Length: 281
Figure 1 (cartoon, rainbow, N blue to C red):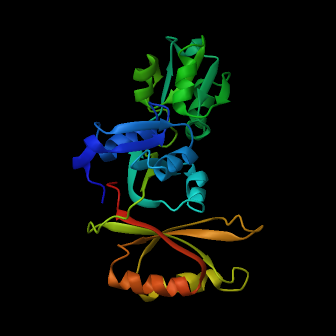
Figure 2 (cartoon, rainbow, N blue to C red):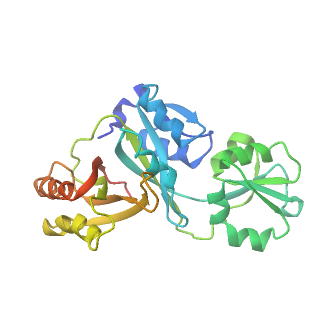
Figure 3 (tube, rainbow, N blue to C red):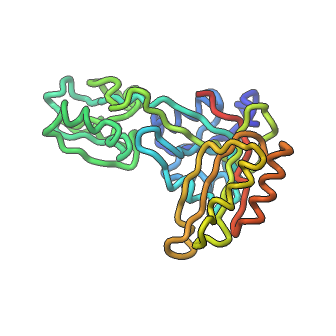
């Protein structure tokens, strides 16, 4: 388990730049006194830990409105890092600009996910504005800080970082919008008493009938609750898939150990990505 008591010594890589929701997730999980390392891509976050330049990383994996962040899951097909924790951050979107009124706005910058989360509000409030996707919300805020008539959609922290006026608050279309982030690192977590386990697997006979059923049947047999399953292309051949599965409990629990041993027997690919404390929802 990641201990916050050592926050002064902890280096945490995250998907930057500063002012993003990823940075908010870092602060929520580790505290404010850690050494944050802002990076441009999810791939770089993984790499920074692998070369020992960071102790942990925080990457987005799922949004309650827009769904899966597939790039994060795909990285586990190539990386040996494990999942050490998860963080849920409520996503409150704000429109910000150096301008003073909505009438002055002719262009809106933001990350594609944030633009999608605010689609209805933008159509109603800024129907004539040009919508411009950028690499991150913070990048959009940075651009809005130097371009006349431009605005950005981002978290309120970005308005403070880039000195912008907030012209619209809570503009996301879904009031309960949230993003789940994974904490990744090199070492597995101890039992916390309120854990989940994520496994990566593929059936040994993916084209036959009942392949996925056989793969998951041991979970039901050992009374284990599966809370999530996601499929991704295996990258080995066309139309071949791997599955990311979340279950309740820690991999060291007796029934889970027995079930995972049986699952592995049906698998062509099997890896426990981590057992870690559940987020405080």
